[in-house]
Length: 150
Image 1: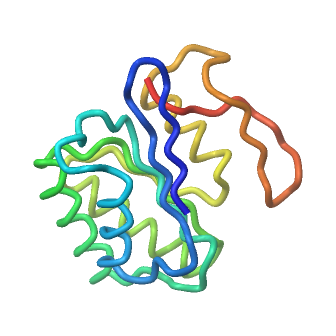
Image 2: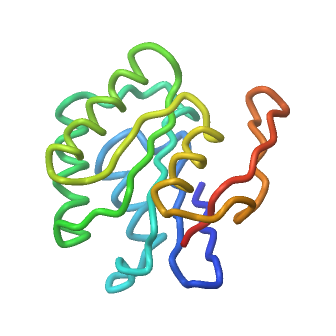
């Protein structure tokens, strides 16, 4: 699933998730479908959700994904948030974020989409109250104001 929220300023946050996204190639194909070539500068942030499937990104997966993102965004990847289940999957996404940070990206791993959206909001320096309300589907509540771009 791709959820692309475009605020009035034109910068977007792209959320990529889905149970078929189990390889770096699948993630990148989904990204290509969400962001037409040449529109990279319109992207404010990326959110990759691994929660929908059992796949745990390996170090090799993370390396290929980060290298591909660096090429796709000409070395200037927008803030990158990941959401994963606890345990090994979360550890794999933390490796992905560490590799992205080694390449100069802002990246962070989270256990809930709500926390990821709050982090994205801070990275894009949105004012309080900006953006939609995000409801944590895991807990069925915990509403908080989320981010859709800057």
